Length: 166
Image (cartoon, rainbow, N blue to C red; front, side, top):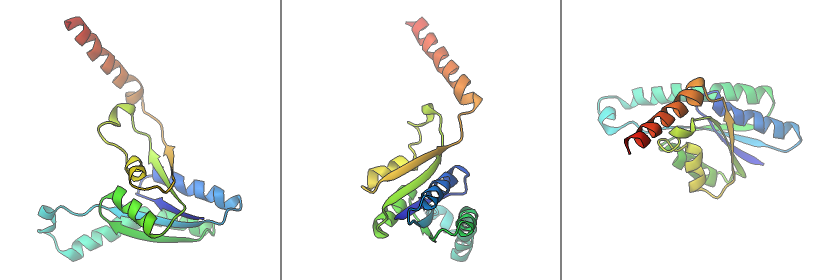
């Protein structure tokens, strides 16, 4: 089974590694493809920097995102390939999944407050919209006190204010 694991430097993204490890320990023959995607630099920024400096920064960011996962997979003796792509994250993930003919995409994501979802649709949702390959999304983390209490109270306060005005 060929599994694509998109990673960034967040702890939430590593949830996918533990899922793939559990598959491997259960006897499923797994090959992991680790992928780190970096956005292109805006042309107004790129014109003032050298290509070598941009490439060095990308290499540093890729190492920060991929090294912990590579160390884990090596320790677990799970076969893998690591790669880096440049472009829009969702598009690159879907493109690599199609190109490499993976069986599944496993993504670890952080939990976002519900009120933020309409402002910032997740990369996982965008990947699902771009490919027919199954996508498993594993959420890590929990909503903080602000998201649990302050946001609902604020929304209720605004609703009460609008109701009072009418």
